[in-house]
Length: 243
Image (cartoon, rainbow, N blue to C red; front, side, top):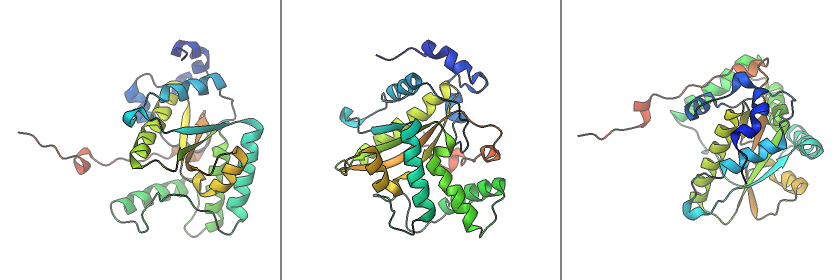
C-alpha cells in the first residue's frame, strides 16, 4: 500500500526550500544534478517514489520496467568496479543498444555541443584536456556521490513501444522526487558497463541495462550544478493545424 505524501512531511522539511509544490514546478525545476550531498535518503521514501512512478502509462499494462536500488556497501562495490574500468580498461565496453546516431547533425549537433561546452566551461576543463574529461566522465560511476543509485533494465525480447513506456516511468520518478526536495540525474553512461553491472547485481543476461540514475539532495555549492540548459521555442517543434 502506498504511503500518503503527509507520511514524509519531516523528510520533506529536510529540503524545504527546494520542494516543488505543483506538477509544473516539478517539471520546470527538474534537471540533471551532477553533485550531491552525502545526506541519506530514507528507504521508505525511495520505495514510495518508485511505487508512485509505476502509475506511468503502459501499453496493455505490460509495465516493462525492472530496477535495482543500490546503497551502502553494494553501491560502493558497483561504483569502485565501474570507475576502475572506465579509467583503466582500453575498450570492450559498449552499450547493448544504440542511444545516439553514428553521425550527429543539426539542430541536434549544436544542442549537444552547447550543453557539453557549457558544463566544461563551468568546470574549467579546456578543449583537448582529455584526462580531465575522462575523470569528469568517471564521476557518472559514483552516481555523482548521490547516496542512492539505481540501475534500470528491460527484457531483451520487448520492442520499442515498451521503451517508450519506460521513458514515461523514468520521467515520473524524476518528477515525484522533486516533490520531496530531491534531485536526480538520469545516466546513459552506465549501460556501457553492463557486463560488470550484471555480475555484481546478479542480473540475468536476458535483461538489457537501460540506464542508471542518481537520487539525492543537491550540493548547491558545487559549480557544476549551476549549469542550466535551454529549450527550443515551441514553434520550432510543434505545428498547429487550426481552422
